[in-house]
Length: 195
Image (cartoon, rainbow, N blue to C red; front, side, top):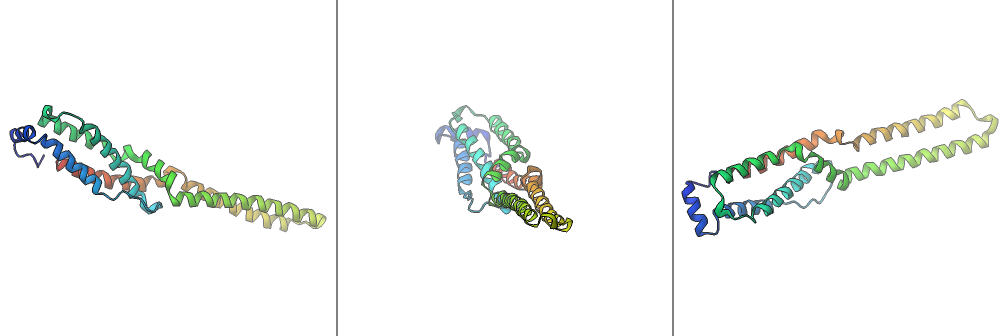
């Protein structure tokens, strides 16, 4: 609590100035507001922006609730307890689900992967139709080489679909999500400890 030199001074100023603690928390709210949380591009490089938006929005909500309180009743112990509680609340692991959900819903990267999968599935349907049409036209002249040619193309498309489907799995992004959330968590805990 580096901003509070003596707890008695804190209590006296709290009575005179509506609340020293309210001022500290308002400063924290200003710090949140000053962060640029507008996410202009949604791709795999912007997970840190998504993590920041999710975690700072949560911190802002916590502040909104706490600012409704009557701080004349707060003690230094209450303040310390609140900071420690917030430190636990902002563990990266707790936010990974929210970050993944937002990323999956809004990411251009995810949308691109989903579009590629749709295109490949359509390509499989077209290959199957082409194969049937050619086999019908060739009749007895249809060969194993013809079947193998289509089979290889279809297998390549199926393999690509399988590869792309992995990118739609949260496990594929776990390392990047954890890294992004950890960076934001450290920033928030630093701000809280500077109260």
